[in-house]
Image (cartoon, rainbow, N blue to C red; front, side, top):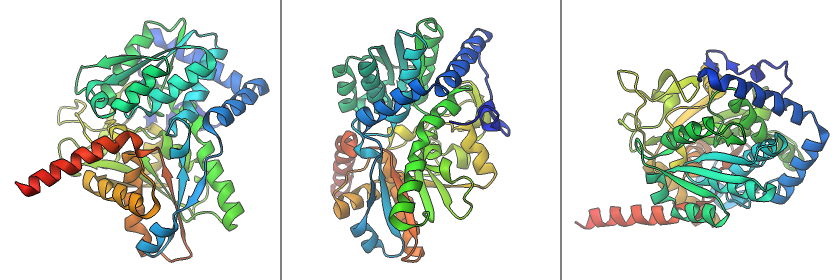
Length: 404
C-alpha cells in the first residue's frame, strides 16, 4: 500500500486526477478514503485479504515461458503472466476482492459494479458471494450481446444484472449508470470500480489492489532468471492492469514499460479508443485525464473488438507516466489483435482474451528486433473463453466477404 505521505495517494498526478463530483459525494469519497487507509493499516484486514486472494484468486499467478511462440518469432524470450488462469478468468478478481472486503469492513450491505468484458462483473459477483453482500452489476447492451457467457455467470453467481441501453450501450454508459445508482444508495452500498478510473480515491485504491501483479513478476524473474525483465507489456483499457503490471518497476529505468491501447479498426478512425494516442485532456466520470473527444469536447463513442478496451479515457496516473515518458504507448488494431489471438492458440495452446491479444501483438512485433538473451513479459489480462464466439463470428463474416 502507498504511504499516505506519498504524493500519488493525494489523488493528483501532475495535471490529472482530482474529484470532479457533486458536493453531495465529496464527504462520501472522503469517508471511503479514510476507511481504506484505516483498513490497510489493520493487520486483521490484511490477513483476511491475503486469505481471500489465496482462496478466491489462487495467488500468485503463474509466470509461463512461451517457448514455441518465442522460437517461431525469433529474438527475445517471451514470458506470460497468467492472470487468465485466475478462477474467474481475469485479473479483475484482485481488485474486486479488495474492494468488496473494504465494503464489508465499512458495514455496507451491498456493492454496485460496472463491467464491460464481464471480467469485473463476474469477479465482483464472486467476491460478494464469498463475503455475503448484495451485488448489482451494470453492463451495456452491446457488451452483453457479445459477452453472453459472462452475463450468465454473473446471474448464476447471484448478481442482479442491469441492462444499460443509454448511449452506445458500452462501458462508459455502464459506468455512468452505476455511479448514478450508487449516488442514491451510498448509505448501505459501495461502488466497486472496474478499473483505476473515476474520482479520487478510486484510481489509487484500484491500483494498490492490483500492484501485486508487478510484485509477483519482479520476484519470479529474480528467482527464475536472476534478473529483471527487459520489457513489460500490458493492455490498456481504463489502466488498472497496466498500472498493476508496471508499479514495481517504475523506479527501474532499465525496464521498458509498454501499454497497448486498442486502435479499433484503424488508429485515425472516428471510433478509435486510443485515448493516450489521439485523445485530449478533459473531465469526465469525476476525473481529469485524456479522453477521446469530438471537436466540441463531447466524449466520443468508441469501439474495439475487445469490449474491455472500449473506455474512451484512461487512468490519470498512467496519463502522467506517459507524459513523463516513463511508459510507452502502442496502438494495436482489431486485425492485429485477432492475428495475435490465433498465433498464441496455435503455438502455445492458449486462448487469450482479446484484450490480452493487443499486448501479445505488440510483443510479436517487438521480439524479433531484440536479442535472444533479452526477456519480454506480457501480462495476459484474462482468458479467451469469453471471446471464442465473437472470434468465430468475425472469422465467418470475413470468409463470407471473401467468397462473395
